[in-house]
Length: 210
Length: 210
Image (cartoon, rainbow over all chains, first blue to last red):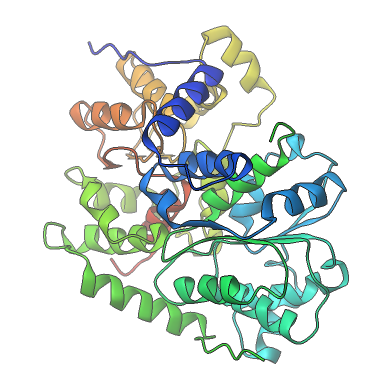
């Protein structure tokens, strides 16, 4: 019968994974704090090459960490992003909020002629100021966030713009990097992104050690 | 002020995404049913290149679809996989079960000297026969599943083996493909995988059209 030889200790698996990533990845262009996020995003993606597409705007890590430490809510565009956050490690029992399945969301979507992922952001407005925004799935959500900011919405403390896909993902992230309305941002350029990478970045930000 | 020009209709975004994927991806080696899964997994990954690593064992699509149509429970190793499944589209109101946060799981983990992700599978045993198993995160869960099957556990109807990462992921998936205990399987070879691709495969299987 087959014998399976594998590491069964979670901490040892993490340590070995991060050692492999640091040995293989080119992290030289990142600050130490950015590199810490990059390692965990690479880990979530299972791809060292993904890091070529990571881009951290000026002040992103400090702004996001300060907001989280100060108890800012974390707004997520997708349930999978929210579910990927390790709530017990958040620095201030921060609320993690996804309004995609709110009963008002489809009503707003019909009203504004946009996706439910975009419409869900309307419900963030009362608490958007100083929050941490994590878009890990829908390009339309990121585009709509930019439209809200353009039209005078309160500014979040930091934006993780990491939607994934083939239609609008690259464009929405490029638009954020080009004009973020002075909000510090992190993006994954191009098609890559997704809920796992986004949640990994949030979990890295939640750690005190960076 | 910036104008953002983007598609705001969800169905149109899907249609355009799938058209891009079918134009760019090499799907020739897949059956029509496998190709349908591959397109949706590529979509979730944001990467056409990921498809090079997809491998569907004989009979996988039919076995998984039949089990789901027959009401089989879907066991997931991670909350993110479970959360990524579109419950309303499941063919038989299938239960989606993740036992990672069950109170017994850490107790079992300590007892068996393995991760919580692996230990959680012990709680699947009473309903494992004929189920659909989706491992989208932890290599230890997939290795432990293989050990359970080796030791005589009831057989699921189909196994999605798609854990992601740098330690054990490639090895656990290769082990499944080498000896699946006659259970039809799908894997993503190497380091790639993850909850989004796994949930996308399940959502594709849930569709009646394939």
